[in-house]
Amino acid sequence: MRNKKGLNVNIVGHDANIGTVGYLKHLGFFRFFGVRTGKDVDEAMGNSRYLPFTRIKRSQIMWKGHVMQEEIDLKSERLAKVIFPGDDNIGPAMMLAYSIREIIRNSFEHGFVDQCIVTAQRWATGEAEIAIADEGIGIFSSLAPKKNYSTPEQAISASLLPGISSESIKDDVKWSNTGFGLYVVSELGKRYGEFEMTSSSRALYFDKQNSPVISNSPMTGTFVKLKVSTKDADCFPNILAQIVSDGEKMAESVPGAKKSASKMSKTPMAWSNQ
Image (cartoon, rainbow, N blue to C red; front, side, top):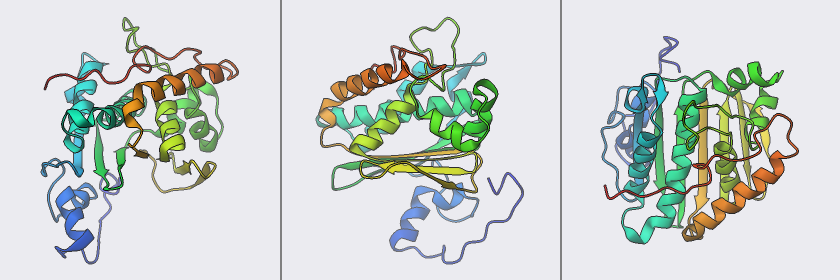
């Protein structure tokens, strides 16, 4: 964002090659923020502990002005399998890939971006953390014209309700965006870990112990972070079905909301052999 505005970025201590600083240099963290040190975005390979800063470009997932949903599906699966490889990790990988897919869809369908950045971390405790950032128009600018929200706080809170951030996709009932994806991802954070979202100069955070809190933030694009425990992830299809069912019941009382989730919002990732 600072680079986009032509602002210089200065960081003290980034020349170190040990500890946290060395790890961040390897991930591509500093290059992402415009500091010319360490590896570039997309340069590191990643392994079963981490996914480095990885760029998803519009040109990779768009064709004739439409999002190629199957390509997002494949990319999300491949990213998840980096940190959860092998048949023994299908449950955690499926949960992570579903979350990556739904957030990436929102970036391109609502944020009108040319690219977004994905990174992830796997912890020894069995927790997995993903973060996806873009420099798009933000949730308030995306939803306000359609839903008449007057403040960013209203738009951000509403975006997590089922059926609100819907976007019709012509001739594609299977992939039609019914506004349940972000709701499902945030519910995963609420029930199994933490959820954080920054957009339109506001930051929202909650977990299973704390109610949502919204504070000010300098970021105008959108940043979403999800941290979940994967200990119950083998039951993800059942977890997803329950969250969607709860959401459809909730949507019945939400004015202007789509009442039913799309087929893909209800469907866990279908693994390929790649």
